[in-house]
Length: 307
Image (cartoon, rainbow, N blue to C red; front, side):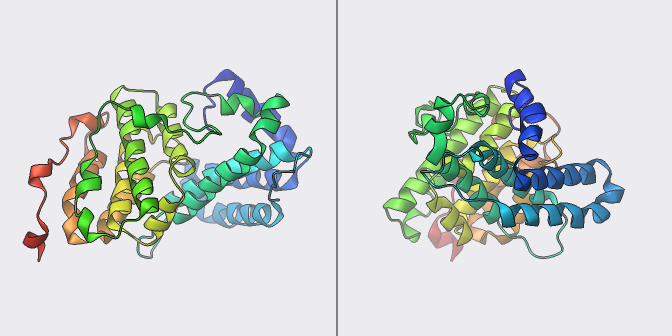
């Protein structure tokens, strides 16, 4: 679970959350779904038998899960927040499930994880002022989200991915929302690049991955759902950088699936940009992202050369 390596957060997940589940049935069903999903990854021969179980439990949880309002300060607030976080975790686990159909971008994960921010933002100070058990999770480092919607990754000194903003910019319709979504998403990638380059612990890198949908502008999800090549390539870079930290049951195999999947649907004029994430996920174990050369601006194909 997120930041469970920290003693206070570990106690929350292992003691407090199960107690909450007996008072809030949707949370209980989500925990049962996650338990079945976890076992399916640990005992692969049981995966087909367990799949209907965790799908059924999560469906039941979603049907009962209550939406919060800004005035909702009842006793179930903590349980609703925890349930939202765990449902988001389950949606990223689903990305590792086998599929026989064509690749689809992770829109469900982006949307559900973004929804966690909406819920937490509405009750943040209520929980902090009441010294909620969730505070240990809120204040866990790295603090990639806060209620003021400030983006610390703008202060990252290195800007290795700016070429993702510059390439074919004139050929795509840009409005203020689009500019903000792309620039902040690329800024987030650069913050993650710095964390991986500094060899931050694996749980920190995974926390940064899970923080992407809540932190970047919601319009990014719309761009990804439209299959804009720039948005898809940004996602490929995001998942490629977490490859080195994928050794967790809910993430194992997902970086490869996302990068190869995105590569299968991006247009040919963007294939050059996919070379870096493809190299990163196929590199020998322990390879850091800074060890793979990035594309240089001078090597970018011109629009005329692709006609």
